[in-house]
Image (cartoon, rainbow, N blue to C red; front, side):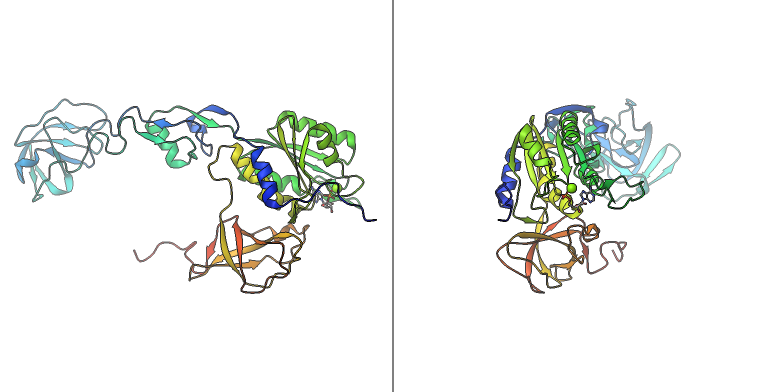
Length: 420
Ligand code: AMP
Ligand code: MG
């Protein structure tokens, strides 16, 4: 009799449903706004004041009464940016102003310095027509008083950082980013700075997973390498549960005698699934222990990283309050025939290129072995080969998850802008 896994095989869709229903955004924290880049806002940000807060000149020039038209004006004062000079103008006069200066009382237009000529105490307006309001940014032109500037759920990037500064929001409420404890398991795994004794290999998974966690906006907590011993596994898993919001393990979830991760998670909490109809990553496991979501990934490096992409990344993004948690998908044309067994849904690693006609072409990264991390290096897409069909022919259209920047067949991706 073949030995059967005790865990029922479930679909990817079902597995994702289970994961996302057990994961909620983390509580919010208050941060100085200048540390908030990359976080997601947990509050609405409104402007207490209008922007600009006063009518401001948008050029260096001369504030005038537009109705005076072109011609000579007496210069009655200066108004630079940053204070109120208190100068007023009346018909026939003007005030020298700088960009960002408050428009002096009585003026309703500013003539840019390039359209003037100064002679002593007088300025000659060369512009033939002057529109009332020209070169003046009225109060609230950019932001109205009380306006909702950044709604809750906004991801804070460079423009948002500046807006928080503009509205004086020195502290912001954001969703906490998940702390993610990561451990590798296996008696054969050693640190990268170690020479290899017979039977040993160096750790890859802790480093791919720490990188993937950082890229997803999480904070990795390194739990090191753990031997395939029940006691050390239990101790390290327990430490991760205390120190982090999410626990990631790799290795030790297959059918071997020393595959102890699943039984331990099941004994400590609720194991929701232990087998998914996916390749790579079939033994990927999800449990919740002491309210901490735990993902046990297979040991093969590609399996670990692809499982992260499919199941863990959306979970981390949801915890961080991100509005969009899934990778974009798009149809792609296969540049080669891909061999595939119809039993499982497979994620093959490809390089996606944008053709001149706008369509995506998927080129394989080569041998798709679960241990061959080189099949993932440089891949910007995972083509989804659904179960139920065998090999996919060259030219077939399949759906691809976009996991990196797509280059186009033309050189538009890295060429300087020319001819405009
Ligand atoms: P396991 O899931 O523990 O049965 O491991 C499956 C395969 O992945 C084995 O060939 C392991 O040696 C390999 N493996 C497990 N963990 C790692 C790791 N952290 N880095 C690189 N290879 C690993
Ligand atoms: Mg192992």
